[in-house]
Image (tube, rainbow, N blue to C red; front, side, top):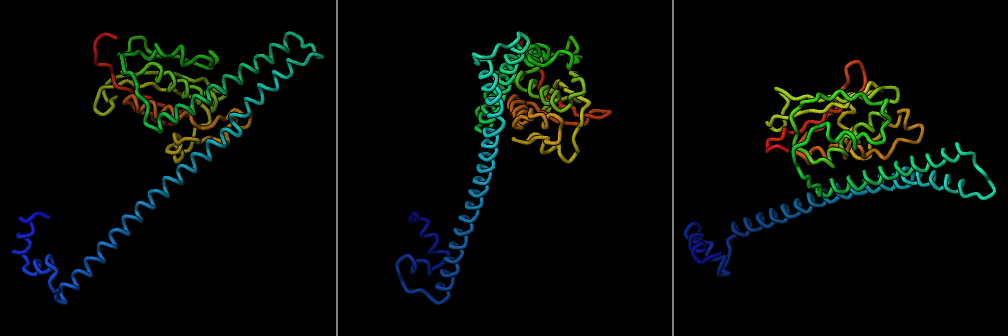
Length: 297
């Protein structure tokens, strides 16, 4: 405390000078000091309690994430590895001669499992980037149609109905990140709506905005099982899976990161990702991104 502040305090309370100089304290001052000391101790204990609770919450979240990752590694990552090893071991048997069609089937199995493993690892790495707030999109003008060839790579053509209009305005996005968003949404639709086409539609116009900016939306629609309205909020949480779907029973359920990654990447580009019921049944994912306002892309 400065001398000026001390002098001011002495004017306000003459007994303050006695306290500074070690003079005798009245009974009233001793009670005030004791009460103030108890208040400081209680305040300090409360701060420590709040910090301890925050640490416990972070520890619990960390333990949940580690448990989920361990589950993914112990099952969902090891399953394709086991399939690859089995197919390779079969092909390497010197005392067995495979017919050409059997050999092609084993090689196709290896390729399929390798693709699934690559996708699982990509999603784990993407989720770690999102969690660490390390996604730095390079935004530029893009058309929805420009990212579709790569985003739909590996998806059977007969499962997709591409109904994108030809002359939509360009959106503001990162091409590689947007490809991952669309790929994950389409994969989810194909997986959980095995008997349904996946329909891609896009539009722009009045009322479609993001943070007050004009925007364009892409809808990835299926007519599969759909989900209960109460489950929508949990849909985008990491490691959430619809374990009662047909795909989960054939060992192709994945680790439940696709939609969480899609949402994190969409928000990193300044957009939104929502889920809603498809008219007539099923699920529709709606990606909304701002329109490009720069020069010609």
